[in-house]
Amino acid sequence: MKLGKFIKLIGIVFGAIILVLLLIVGVRYAFCPIYHFPEPQPFSGDQWYNPYANLNHQWFQANFHVHSKIWLGLTDGRNSAGEIHQHYRSLGYDIICISDYQYINAERNMGIERFPVYEHGFNIGKTHQIVLGARQVDWLDYFFWQNRNHKQHVINTLKKHADFVILAHPLLNNGYTLEDMKWLTGYDAVEVLNHFRFSIEYWDQALSAGKAVWVFGGDDSHNISYRSETGVNWTMIHARSSKRIHILKALRKGRHYAAAGYGGVNLNRLKSVEIEGNILKVTCESPADQIRFIGQGGQVRKEVKNSPEAVIKLQSHDTYIRAEIFSHGSKLYLNPVIRYDGKSLPVGKVEIDLTATWIQRVLVILFLALLVYATVRLKRKN
Image 1 (cartoon, helix red, strand yellow):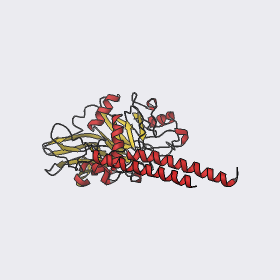
Image 2 (cartoon, rainbow, N blue to C red):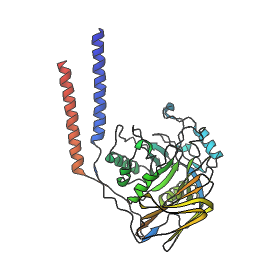
Image 3 (cartoon, rainbow, N blue to C red):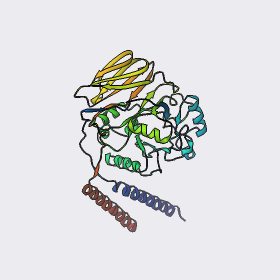
Image 4 (cartoon, rainbow, N blue to C red):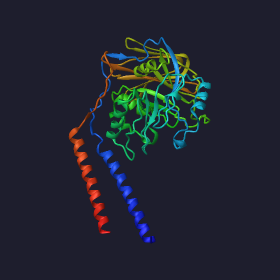
């Protein structure tokens, strides 16, 4: 075969591959639903939901975000599951669930019965989710770009096959935008603490929009020998036991908090959160350098220094109040007390806009058909 013909053949094959990939990607994007997102509404009601009412069980120190060596090392995990368990056990953790990318192996958990966990997402924007209690690995994703409809579609799909969905590291690569947090719904928590980024503002944005979503902290460690990413962010869960059913029940109720520190050491712990009348009181096990109360819009409502407790008067304009506790370099981020009707917390729902969805599908399919037609015509001319 002459060199010219060989180069032409390579060009044809390469063009065919590109065309097929464009068709696959185009069809995937075409069939994403377009949603109608209800206008965000701040929390309201004449009663307060306190996730820490009656703390009469025990605390478990947990990390649900750590990566092992999998997929031939392509995902940058450096350690085996056994090495990870041994290391975190030496740090005093009670529960470790390895969250590899698009891979479940519940036997790789430590301190909890079969509890399938994985990190979902293989798009270039790092729009990822931590999936707890997964019944399968979902491969739906939008690789190149994601608007709000794409992100909501992924969340809805994951929730169908899992018990608890966490938005992972929202600030990393702007995987989620602040505007997204006002509208997206159907997930359970935000990974506010991650060794790559702290996404506190993103969480407050969601809370201020009336999304009852909880805090989460995870190392996101890929190499346990790096002290800067291992044992630095974790979640403290108040539950009856470390059984899966009890841990999930506690997480859904928000009976946990996120902590940041060093070497997994709890320099301070939460003792109680109480509401009496219109007074909110937070008490720690030991004096804190500072306790801050945060409210609507992420505004600091009050600060108390050098005390094991702090109180704040709940005002009529307060929609939620959460506390941050700082002690000798460690940081605790508590879930908020939330205004509600005394029956149930608000559950956000989105509906598919069928008209807009089908218009999009028809237009994309027509575009792909024209692309194929133009490619075939060009090939015949050559």
